[in-house]
Image (tube, rainbow, N blue to C red; front, top):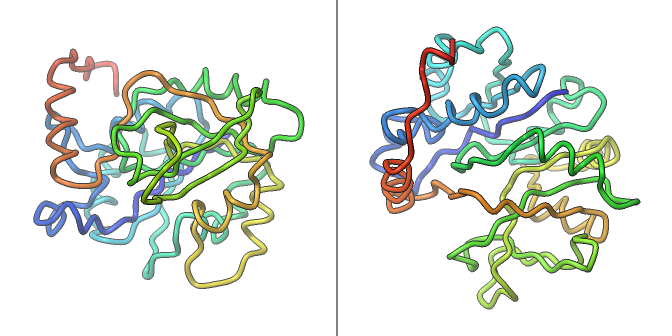
Length: 241
């Protein structure tokens, strides 16, 4: 099984840090954010695709020294394609679903194996499983309304008066039907939240993550993540090679 880490964002709200550091390499306790993702995804996934754009050479140099470098494929976007555009542009690499897709600018401790198991046990008719979490900033997130089966019945992307706090965590397991729908879209920039997810409302299974999950979207969020993780034990680096 394969996974995609969407890591090409410019990170304008993280300036001046992102003037010299790619967003996906923002440091949390001295470790680049993307390393937390790679550590979590391997060995559950056979290969991981990482897209780059802003300061792509810096990301490529970092991946070249990763203990998982032989299982990571990098693809550079001269112009940003959008979260769905990256999937459309790499449809052949994705192969047969399901494929995990995640925004690499989040810091999370979700369990990929448990998420996969939930996807395998999803309600009939669902072609996507979405990780969710309770947010303390609902106006900055995609807020969900679920039925009794935990299937998404309403999706409200960054609205002024959101109907709750259960948010899209931007981690998905996506089946071929969704990937083929994305590939059929046209346009220079394609977005999962605004162009794809609304089309599949009623067919998305929501799995709530009750652990840690934070969008590293601005300097305040990055500082909060560093403060939060300072209270946790550091991983044994000898086990990461």
